[in-house]
Amino acid sequence: MAHGATPSVSDAAEAAGVSRATAYRYFPTQGALLYGLVRRAIAGSATRSIEAPPNDVSARASEVARSLAGDVRDHEHQFRALLWQMLGNWLAGRRGEVTEELPRGGRIAPIEAAMEPLRDRFAEDEVLRLVQALSMLIGIEGWVVLRDMWHLDDAAAIETLDAAVRWLVAGFLSSAEPLAATPPGRKRKAPAKAAPRGEA
Image (cartoon, rainbow, N blue to C red; front, side, top):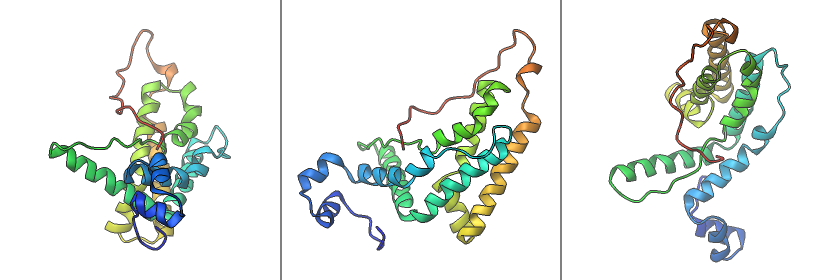
């Protein structure tokens, strides 16, 4: 992939010098192979401890956004290839064809960790909505918009992402209703939750 190819499982097996049977045991489809590559690319960011203090959720969100953006920058081909695979699956499903369900959601865990300090201050459904909103910005999709639509270089794309993340968190903090301000007995309607996700 570093040379511009998007290998099949057979191609990967040949390049790695292992049998096709062995390769298919670990990666039964090309989608599974691409998923595994992306999981490897974000492994460091997904498990890295957040250094920003708990009382600065904007800095915590920025830290996670920059870390994951660095992963996308350094492994852009893998991320784009997996996105292409997922879009192809969606189109195949629209045609009534059998599709491959790929796990997803690897960016969610670090975003949730960054927003953890808010859970004692705001309702769970409000924090969930913030995490969902941040997940729209952080990842390959936002990167494609900034790089392909706006033709930003890597550094400018990361700076723009960082600004957007900070603005979103600031907007949440200025508009969301703290738990202490919620009238007794009042329940908030939870937002629609995403479909069950895996680890990617």
